[in-house]
Image 1 (tube, rainbow, N blue to C red):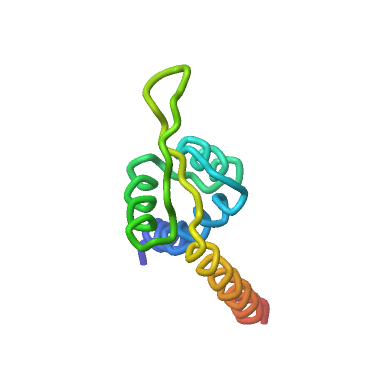
Image 2 (cartoon, rainbow, N blue to C red):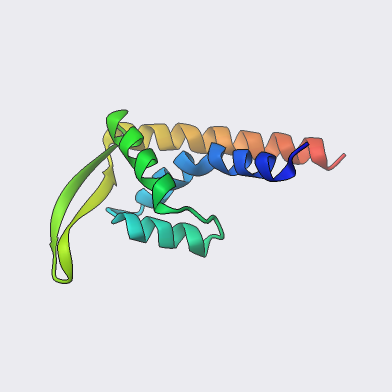
Length: 108
């Protein structure tokens, strides 16, 4: 068994849920999302984040707006759509059920 691969797959499985959760607090620039994930000890690099943001946008869960920046080019800020809020709620329920099931299974 490759433990590092298993750990990476576990993280990968929850990244979309975490991104939606971060955005539930308001519009975010990708670097802000990365920093919030780092604070939670969930390291995400731009090469992972940007494709996920694009997929979530294409699925109708996110929208974005451009905002001028005083320190460089315009920035793209992402936000949840109404569908994104609905999906986040469903994922939250599923996450809580999964955590409960894993805790019951591993604490025997």
